[in-house]
Image 1 (tube, one colour):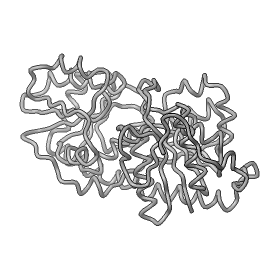
Image 2 (cartoon, rainbow, N blue to C red; image 1 turned 180 degrees about the horizontal axis):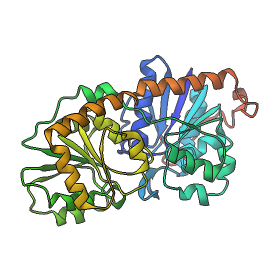
Image 3 (spheres, rainbow, N blue to C red; image 1 turned 120 degrees about the vertical axis):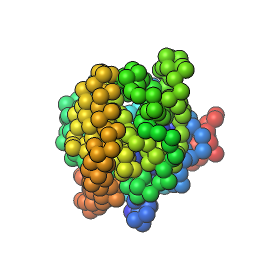
Image 4 (cartoon, rainbow, N blue to C red; image 1 turned 90 degrees about the vertical axis):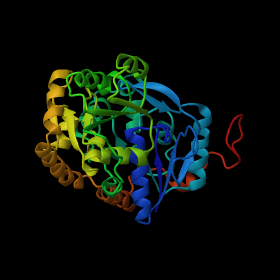
Length: 378
């Protein structure tokens, strides 16, 4: 089986969808499946089996910035790769995102499995023309949460199988912990209003002087928030870090904090923290609550005082150990191996009984010559 896995977002930039795509492809390859990932890359490909389609452009989406590549050059590279690889099946993530995902639906060289990640609404679904028709190009549709399923079905119609985001449990559980000098809280995320970093920094004012905070990532609020907390030696701004360093920081921290204000369909970072053996304090959002259940301390969003109290409770050694134990058990339910098996079963079923509307692959030859254009990769 030859599977093309399409990601609309830059694979070299941090993001939940990108990490899911790369980890899922890795896990499937370990099981003997030929998987090639196609997506934008702002630099060298981050993993083996990646076909870079060009650099990304920032686009506003769901209160955040999505690094997509909607330019014609990237689409021509994608079309050439789809032609050359002759995939048996495409697995397209965020199928209605502009760029590689949407182009894959348009050319549709093979049966398509689609995974919908977005929660909290999507302007693309509402305002881009032809979205409902493009949705019909997806043969089997999955959503990563009930919220994501609600958004997709309400805007696009169709039926969806709700799955989950997976985590490579062993990578987090066996990482070497980063050393600490006292009780340490970790934040990982883009520095934008939706992620609630400002609320966490306000909460830090009420915490004792021996508590440290590691802040991973950057974004449009970084400069303002750093200026606001200048002179506080407890706060360490780490900037963007690689996956190995992230796992080490999660293993070393006493507590992981996710103070998001909304728009979280799943919360894969919570599962990563659980797999790393780190207690969690998170906002009581539907996506987070369903994932965490009793394995995290949940608090109402927007409230720095409530957050500070929850952080102190969770740093208590007894409560901390309780949440760590519950989190490890909970993380096992989100194994990437388990998720890969679910998708592989769907792939086999689809290939064994392809829908009548699937275009015969032998006829998909729009152009068999070279694709040459200014700036294209050779």
